Length: 186
View 1 (cartoon, rainbow, N blue to C red):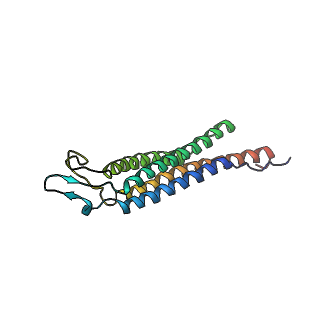
View 2: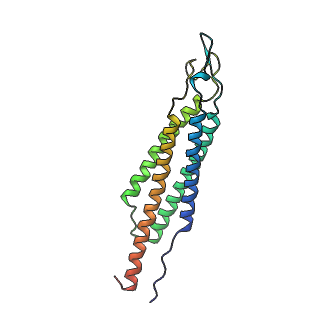
View 3: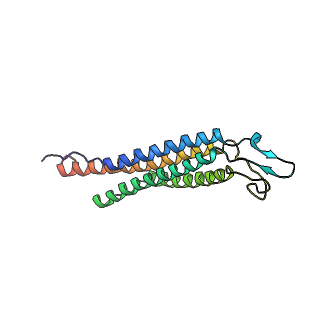
């Protein structure tokens, strides 16, 4: 009896690569936003009210959010596609605990980074005299906000894709055991 070669899911690997690409793009956009954010010297004060022009980080922040959203959704699709195909093909397939933990970490860090980026993006908009960002006061994005978000982006994408790889590895091991049982070698 001939042993069939193990199957490798190229679609899932391709989706993981696309997710990683969007993640790297959002990381570099976030670093660029940190460099281009408004500084204290950009604030104009007339004695009673303040004004701040739109920061160049505003557009970079929006682009970061969009690319992070695509990276996370594509990574989630890869994970779900990978898991669902395992459940169909292997009736006793169980998602590894490490994969579940990594998946949870990816969602928590995704939520935190989205909140940070939305607030920073909002602060990077034009703050008119007397209107400001909040209660008529001008606010400047604190240094390190975008850098911290960039690190969280790496955690998000790394843990999400790590979860997908964990499921791929478990599936490959289960298929290898199934092949050995069928061939009588085990």
